[in-house]
Image (cartoon, rainbow, N blue to C red; front, side, top):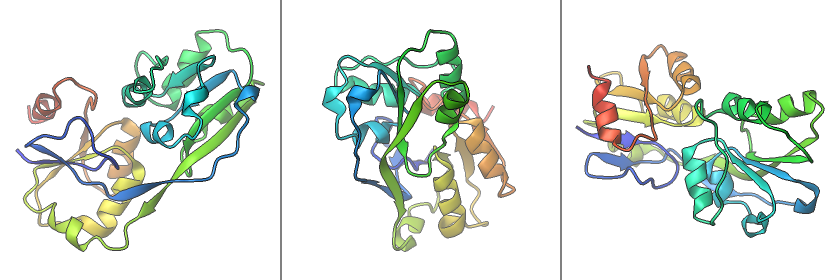
Length: 217
């Protein structure tokens, strides 16, 4: 079985059967923020953590991660973040916040073009919330060599809408018989917009290969 993971950085899942092939690059952007104004810090992605200039200054903050991947990245800096019990998404974070008392101002750290559902919800509920973009996503100049890597592949894992869009614009070949895997229902819906079927997998499973094999039954 041959699997390509399109996540934009090397993952712990990479092995003989799973190869990481990013479809865009992550670029840090200029950040201006006074952390003393915020009590709650929400990270929407691992890349938000990786590119945050003031990552060493969060000791006294309430830290929330959207999912296990983001939480794992924060643990590299010795932070134990709160994460949703399930639904590692904006909805999951909102549900988590609704189950606890939220005091002080909140900062949502994300990438340019990322969803604003959390900040929109909190502000609509009169919880003062700002956003900070720490990175943007840029397409590669050419996909000729990347397209070659998808020949003979059995599965492709998509973790972002942008990766899906780039794949169908620059990579997809209708003659290939590969199957598509999504890390969330939202990504599955994007794949569906291209008239293609996909399965949602537990990307954070301890045995991702076994998780993928389960999609065949």
